[in-house]
Length: 256
Image 1 (cartoon, rainbow, N blue to C red):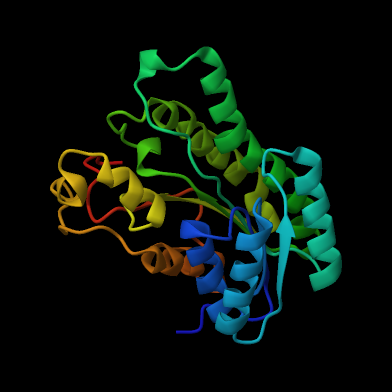
Image 2: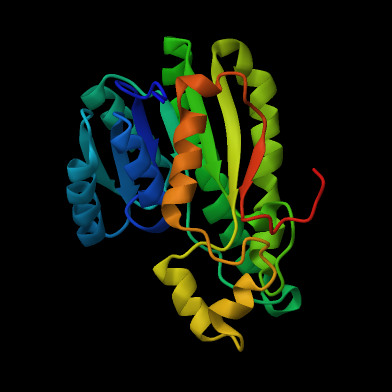
């Protein structure tokens, strides 16, 4: 099935590893031009090389930046738009925040988490939306976490700040829909990344303990999140907006 991504220009934040790279790869495989951003120049170079191999027609570029730097994010958007001919798709993404119980974190840790996992997304969307409005078409995708819908034990920072993205996304839906721009949220559950595997080593039950409460009985593979993102980013999903899509193997128990 052609998802209609050929010729589209996509920006993927924190797209040099893990879930971000999986999404960037899926978009490149579908023919999109992809620009990824990340802090590590070494990781960025490897990601660009990998994406160039995966690409099926679109160009690839990389930008070194910290997603918390509002001016650097704005510069990335403008440079990518100038190089590739605009911006059609933006994927917000950021790692962390780290684990810990609610009363164990100082107030500053909550401020830092808010900056990393909410305000960085606001910066990227604010810079990209004018380009989409000029085209009369766009896709905004937020990568968050299952914790945005269902708190995870020992992840108080994530449980606190990530739901803010859902409110921001819903607000954007009512502001951008008449401009041809859809806004959706991907909420991945436990996904097999190097970071998760390292974290699981310190848990009593390890990965088997993590998968015990997942109905499908396994971790997600990053490419499965990429496939969901590619559909939402394409032309066939034009009537899907304002949704929060759990990619969690059925782990979320909520009805909504």
